[in-house]
Structure formats: structure tokens, C-alpha cells
Length: 297
Image 1 (cartoon, one colour):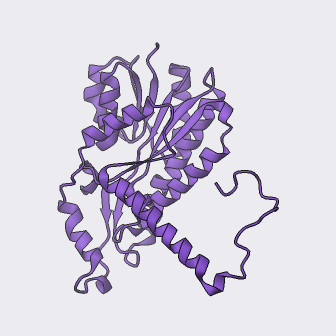
Image 2 (cartoon, helix red, strand yellow; image 1 turned 30 degrees about the vertical axis):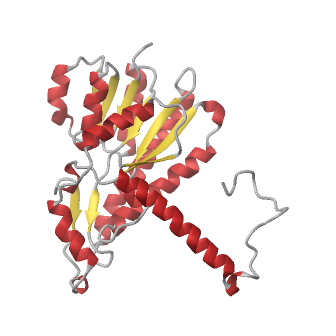
């Protein structure tokens, strides 16, 4: 079987770099994309251009995105797996977050990821012969349970999750395209270092005793996170080989527990509302209505 062609965004560090190294070690082909291609000079010296193509890509720049996918088509003629990994964090209270910082982060974490997802599906459907492909879309545990001190970051990941959930429902099953949301918990990467985590000055109203955002600020920059990033990328490689995976894949005990806790909380809230007096006269379902099939699934 011919080696698969992977496109991995955010290949400079963290999960992206580790996954790039793993896929190359398996004899497969990687299109490694990042804003500063020189960072991968060591890998480019180790692997031939027929196995490693390093492409300059800013995911917020649509011309860059179009050029990257055009380069893949020109060089390899197909694309089997896209790993949507580029992104960064923002540590700040919601009231204390300058909106320009929040918007800039959303450009990467939401709009940039959306740019890649759209082009990936288009390529899988319109270029690959036969049709088909796999998108592994990395979000975070905060898409399952938003975290204080990371409000806008959490929002960017929740929005990205919601977009891919809708996208997965829109795709014609006959296209043979699989979208998977990867929701990692706390894994030790460069994600808590200043290069990958923007911080805003603390809002003075949130310095009160017992402030959870103050505790988060004190913890995150010096934290040694429990998850092993090497193990996570091996899991990603295994997931790419699985034909039948759920839409959402929380990775790490903390992420799995967050998903279970969220499901329990949603169920409890819904059952409480069902019994509330204010809800009794509302139209809570539409038997015999004209909704399209699958609208509420």
C-alpha cells in the first residue's frame, strides 16, 4: 500500500512537531506547515522532499491556505489525512481581556481552523480519486468544560467544536470523509510557555481571597502537566487508522471525566427544566412538524 499523505498544521512544536516526527518514522509522507519553516531544518535535512514537504503557512491567511493545498495537489496529487492543530492560549479574566487580544486569538483558533477544515473537505471530495479523507481536528478539554481564567480561549474551542459538529452532519456519507474532534486534557507541551500562551494583566477586581482566576494565573505558567504528549500523538496515529470512531474523542482521564461530568450536568439541568412551572406551556417538541431529518440529532 502506498504511504499516506498527511498535512499537519502547527508543526513547529508540541503535538504538531511530535506527530510529524512519528508519521515520518512510520515511512509516511508529511506536509508540515508552520509560520517559520526554518524551525524544521533538522527534519528537512534528515528526510527527502519526497517524504517531507515543509510549507510556510499562516492559517489566518486565506492565500497561504489556498497555496498550501495547491502545493499538496501539485506535489502528491492526493491528501489522506489533515491534522488541524495550530492554535494558542490566552490567560486572562474575561473582564480583563483586551478585545484585540481575544479577536487575534479567535482568528487563529477558530477562523484559521475553519479555513483548514473547509479546504480539507473540499480536497478530499474534489481532488482525491477515489473520494475520501480524514480530518483530525484538535480542540481541548475546555470545549467540554470552560475554564475560569481561560474564558475567551474556552470560547474559541467551543466555537470550533460546534462548527465541526455541524460540518460532520452536512457532509454526504458517500464522500467517504471522516471528521473527528480530538479533545485533549492536560498534556505537557509548550502550551503553558510564553511562546504559546498570551497573558493579559490581572484585572484588579479578581484579586479577592479565594479568587479562582488568581489561582489559575499562579498555577498555569509553572505547571508540570500530567499527560504524556508522546503517548497522545501515538493515540492520534492510531485514531487515524480507525474506521469507526465517535465524533468526539476526549483524550486523557481528565478529558473523559470532563465529558462525563458535562453530560451528567446537562441531563440534570434538562430534567429540572422539564419540571419547572415556567416550562409547562412551552412548545418543547414539534410532533408532526416540518423539520428536516436529523435536525435535532
